[in-house]
Amino acid sequence: MKSMRSWLFVPGHQQRMIDKALGLPADVLIFDLEDGVPEAEKDVARSRVAAALDGARGGPMRFVRVHEAGSSELDADLQAIARAGLQGLVLPKVQGPEDVLQVCQWLDRHETRAGIPSGGVGLLAIIESARGLVQAPAIASVTPRLVGLMFGAEDFALDMGLFSHPGQGLVNYARSALAVAAASGQIRAIDKVFTDIGDLDGLAAEARQARDLGFAGKAVIHPGQVGAVNEIFSPTEVEERWARRIVEAFERRADEGPATVDGRMVDRPILERARWILDRLEGEPNDQQAD
Image (cartoon, rainbow, N blue to C red; front, top):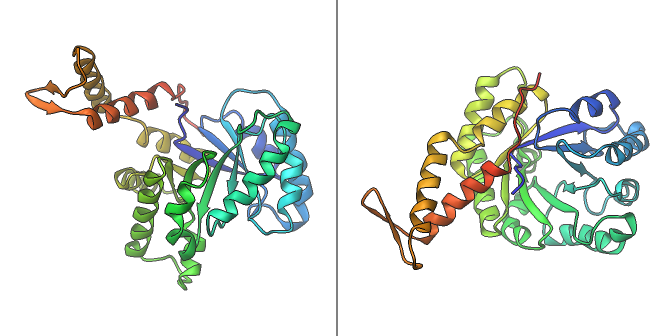
């Protein structure tokens, strides 16, 4: 299973940032065509992102944040980036399952024509409104293409009428609800960005809290945030040892019943958790610290 711990936003019009990002240890790059790009630079961004998708393979997975469903810019985004190097789309401002299905229908028509295997483009939906949060369980199960839900805290705060940073109580409620919704669809929950790029201690604290809430990864906006996020969302050595002991205990059994580890009965759900941890370890590259 490919790791998707760190999701680095990269402005699509900034060639220098694109070039640097391709060599970073982020698990996923999100080439941005939406909010991170000035209106006058949209066509430049599409061209540069398309070239990045056409480039050498390897390194981070390559997703692209396009404009939201219903935007006049969306079709131009999709036409520009539908090519073999595209691994996923990030869909902003998702309000309900219909927003995801609109993009699915476009991909179904154009994917193979662009040299992409049928069903090969994954989707990540950003939940940025009260309506989107309420609809999150339905969104999470709308298509097998969907790999995760991401929480967009800033727009969510505006939608709730909070024009300064939202209170932690509301943020944590929304994050928890999104994590539960993602789990109900058996997909990943990806946490919001941490905007203070100079506060690595604050980033680490928020990432640990997100992991405790059930998130599998976190969005980042600076290369210096990648290393901490990768580390925090990776299984620890203690978790790895525990998982291997659980799996080995079941492998020694001849039947499908519970196993016993340290005098305690261990049943199938715990085995699946152990296998999930080991799958994550196998999917992680050798991380290098980003500057």
